[in-house]
Image (cartoon, rainbow, N blue to C red; front, side, top):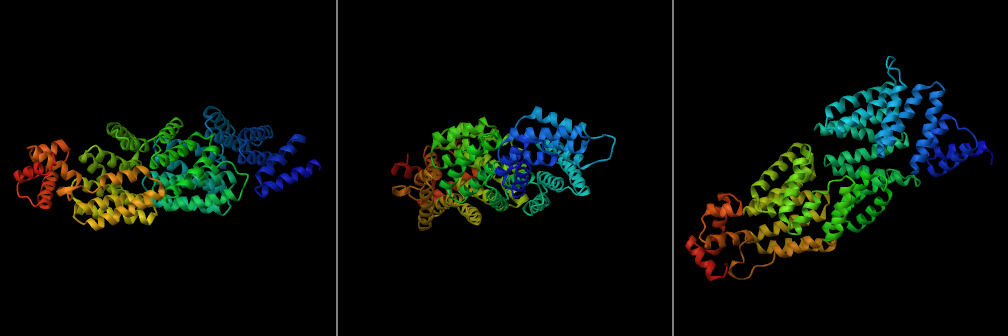
Length: 542
């Protein structure tokens, strides 16, 4: 085969998105003759898309030199931009920053703006986002978008729209931001942009949807990303990110074994990407925790932490289940203190409520539950509404208001059913069972507990199953109708404590204590504290 034949085959393979063939054929041609600029850029892209990062950098550096020496500063600036962008993305910040500076040096500061000026605004916008300055990021990406429109540059246009969408969601303009993200995805799915930009947009949009708790949209775009990856068998980057998101969706829908398999494959692909690998390890740790595999969970949380991913709230919840309540509470509080923005806090508040209830800090749990409800009301996302309703129901139950608890927990159950989250549905049903038993509706309590038990067994959720059996075990004897909290109050009444003293010991309000006392008197048909004390001694409650 002649050199031109190999080169032409490489070009054709590139056109067909057969990245492995394109890389092999263009590399073979490059060994025999100097490649034109277009071919060098295609070789660089094929190398990048098949996971050969250094080969990609080398080819693009040759393209830059050819442009710079050939008197094409604009094209040289674009090559240098992509070199800098790729290097920074893989953690080589100093070298990447050098290439970005070189890109700026190719542009005339006194000359008219070009599309390349727009590309060089992208790092500025990303830095503003990372610094928690979404307004500055929005201004930068508005300019990127305007330059993309002016120069009819599809890649620049979609990257500008992507940045505007993310900055808008960070500013709390969720509907506007999501609309911009959808527009960016339409351009990608229509094949209007280059493959590397397409992959960047897919991953960024899915991440942004997760940030704003728009799981339906995240699921839809994750499915689209899966199809895109599958249409290019040689594709290496982006496939691991896709697998992590698919695994998270599988876990939510109760497909835990499939999620574990997907995460294993994702970790293998993401070995060179610390941030994405950290997300994969955290997701794996969560699966281990839910299945009661504490040693494996701890190891996975540690690995996630080493890769820069916070291990909370998962690790704090693991400590809670292990009985290390003080450690769990301290970790949860610290993580919440460090969270940024209402949505960042909302990601932790549900777990925080659970941990505060475990340490009997009802005041902190109530405050967190109300904050979560406020965020759910402001951003109106199904997942947030379900989280808030679940938290408020658990708090009501702990405070002895079983009737209000049932209302909130039924709302949570309906929300989780809409999202198709069987584990969360079962958790809500456990609390509903406890509330029904406290209200004297033992048949409903049994039905709810049986339904939850079936789900936990199917999933292999050992800790949740053990907790269900512990909290819903039928008390023997004449105190069978009392909740665990009411038994605590009865013991303290019998020890001679006043409502104020009981409130202080249990860290609840006097009003809540009074409600518990009223419920105890009604359930046991008693009329006074003296009668309750006698009853406690007579029936061995102490």
